Image 1 (cartoon, rainbow, N blue to C red):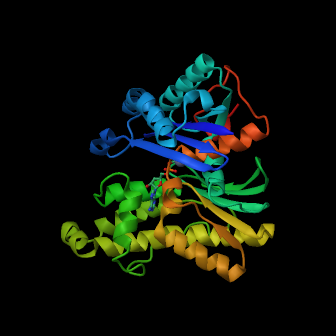
Image 2 (image 1 turned 60 degrees about the vertical axis):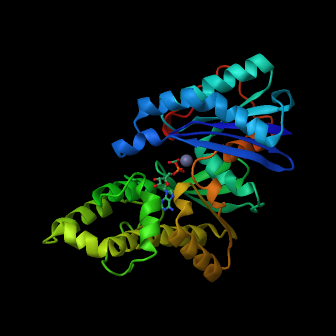
Length: 333
Ligand code: KG4
Ligand code: ZN
């Protein structure tokens, strides 16, 4: 089966081509327009998707050496995400599907982050997935393909959101996650003990207090500029430490409570080097198989949409022209 995957849920316009033989292309057009605003501006995101989507899809077909007529299904992100951004991808995919008579598959972006682990490997069911992105932080028990049970999620900020908001407080460019990760490598993770919330409550997370605590910690410094000049790497490392400790402790709870033998990491924050390291240690300690997507498949991409689309098409989970976007998981139809 040859699947064209299209992703446009936030600020990456992406297209990928998957065949049974593997991922043949994975093209991402990132939108730099948001940098100056320190966050994604929804209206600008939709316009940028609209401008680049055709070029991105064409490039993905060219790189894969596949003609559109050879595509067996078009998989497109249905949600969650920004409504305007999702609509651009969805309308484009519907148009292509209608004009070329190619079946359509509507993919849940958060499922796709999980199934990104199936691009290069074959995790065994049942497993627990820690999905950590800019909009979500969840522990999910996956008993079989598309059989998901939500164990718990964040009550407020997502882990990626915490990284990004703290990055903003520290005066770092957007998105803060990768920058904090990079800076942490030169800092002392025990420099300051930032709070790790809700450790006694099994599968739920809370990261908004951490953000506030970083804000107050900086306000307490006599000369904030000088302090950051001397200790930015240490603060970054201590923030990374607090976030990743919570994530792995919760993952540990989930493994023990569900008695699974496999765990997968998913979403943009799974690119975090400290989290990857700690998850490997945890998996080793509890003798679990651990799967983490390669870096290109952690943050938003269309390869994960294509592989999930392939798995859905195999199960006849096709969509029709009534396919509608959903902004959040709770209003999924
Ligand atoms: O999955 P993703 O690309 O988009 C969403 O579905 O939200 O995740 C984006 C999030 C951002 O918050 C970004 O800061 C974070 O993933 N992120 C990281 C790293 N790379 C991306 N956070 C920490 N360390 C990283 N290396
Ligand atoms: Zn994502």
